[in-house]
Image: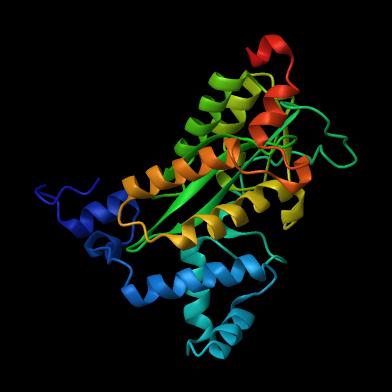
Length: 275
């Protein structure tokens, strides 16, 4: 947008584009090693205590011997896309102009694959930096149908994951998400509507409405992410793919009578779909 070789001055170009002059000269700085390590600890604490805000997290960190102030904790939480349970996670901050759809799963008996799919986004720490992971999960079988990683929280990697799930497994009756701007965007909701899928969204701040995806994130982080130190996005993608394949095909689930998600999903699909 800004052309530094143009005859117009940078100040005049900024005025014409209605953007701050400061943003023209701003150069992004990488996250420091100290902040990256602190973000990793905050992420672990957030999984254990999702109700903890910046003040409580500061106190928990101080008890661990990590001296840090509330403002710094709050700043890093915003960068990670997390907030306390009583407020909606920042990865799920809705756009003020996008419509929000009602929650359709309350009192609904979910008794078969492809009845309800759900999707969410989570923060994934690496050795240097971080990425975001989005996944589509079948609510009944807990099977991860598709997933994508991205260095930004834009809508495109969510669209790609949903389209892959539809291409591979057909369409669900209901698709449930939170009220994040990615999921309330017209591009996302139009994709679901075009495929005849009913849209369901969690209540504001009600993370338990999408509890099975939250449990997936807990498994992914404790059984994979926190045991690694990804050096690159490609390494993270490969390692996460290996774990999610194991999650589907080789990891028994107590709530599935010790069966794997793949076993439950494919055994209970109509034969023509399973084929």
